[in-house]
Length: 475
Image (cartoon, rainbow, N blue to C red; front, side, top):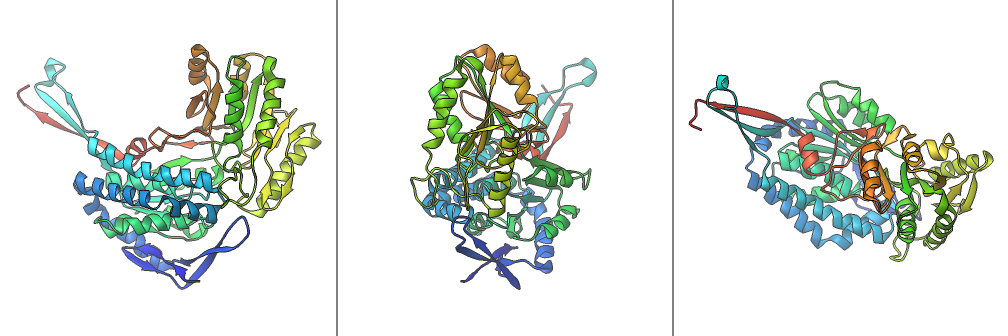
C-alpha cells in the first residue's frame, strides 16, 4: 500500500516511518500514513510562524475565495469523503454523508461571515470632556494555532478549526487523531489548490508525546483542542499566556415533560443516544421523564431503540456502527455490568459483540453510578422518572459536565426556565442534546470546556479587538 503523505510548508512528505489506519469494523487496512520526524515538526511550526505576518495582512477576498474553493470542492466529493469517514472511523455511511455535507457548510459559513465583516464604529463624543472623537474597532489574529482533533468527526471537526483559522489569517497546524487522520489530509489536499501561503495549513499525524511538545512551543499563540477532559485541562495549564479553546466531554441530560410530543421525543432520543454509537460529546446519556408519562415513554423508547440496525458501516441502511476500539467495547460492557450489580435494570441491549456494543437502555439507576456520573462515550442511555420540572433541572445540573441538554416541552415558560437554569453551553428545546448547527456557538461549562466554536465564535476566540481612536474629527 502506498504511504499517504502529510503536508509541511506546501510539500507532501512521507517521513521515515509510517503507521496503518485500520477499520474499526473488520480491522482492514484503510491507509498507511507517513509519520513526521522531528525536522518535519520543526519546519511546520517555523513555517506557520513565518507565514503569520503575510497571512494576517491578506485581503478579505483572498481568504474568502480560498474558503469558497474548499467548500465547492467538498461539495463535489461528498460521497467519496463520506466513504473515507465510514472506513476510517466506523461511522455508518448515512451519518458519514451528513458529516461530509456539514463540512461543506462549515467552510461556506466561514467565507460568508468573513465577507460580511465585523468591524465596529463607535461615537466617542458622548461626554463634553471627550471632544470630537470616533473609534474604529477591528479584530486581529493572535498568531499561529495548534489544532488537536478527535476521532469521532474526522472531517468536520477539523474543518471547525481550519476554516476559522484561515478566515482570520491565523496559520494552523493540525494534529489529527491517530485512528482517523485521513479527513485532515483530505482537507490539506484541497487547501493546496488555493493561493494561500503554504504555511497557513499543515498536517502532522504525530504521537501524543510529540503533540505535547508542540503545545508547549511559544510560537503557537493559540490552542484549539477537542477531546478528553483530562488532556484538555492539562493543556490549559501549560502556559497561562497561551489562548486555549477546549471542547471536552459530557454526559448530556434530556428532559421529557408530560406535555411533550412523546413519540417525537422517543424517536429523537433513539437517534441522539446511538447514531454515533454514543461516541459524541453531546450524545444523549441521561433521560429524565416526568413520572406520569414515564412508563409509556419508556416502552415507546425501547421500541425505537430495538428498531435500530447494527452492522457494517458501509451498508447505507445501518444506524449504529462499531465502537472505535475493541478495548472500549469491554470498558462499556463493564460499566453496564457494574450498574446492574448495583441495582440497575437493562431494558434492552446490554450485549457486547466486538466490534459492536448493542444499543442499550438502562433503568433504575442512581446518580452516583458510573453510567450516570461519568461520560460513557458509548451506545448506552439511562432513563429515570422525576416529579417536578425543578427536580429534572436539578438532576441535569447534578454533573461535573455542562455541554448541552435537551428539553421536550410545549410550555414556553418551561423552555425559558430551562435556558436560564440548566448549566450548559446550549439548551435544545424539543430536540436532543446531540443537535448542532455549524454556525451556532458551541461549547460547554464546568468540566465540558472553555470557549466556543462555531465559525463566528471561533473566529472571535482566535482574534482580539483593537481600537483606533480618531481625534478632532467633524461629527
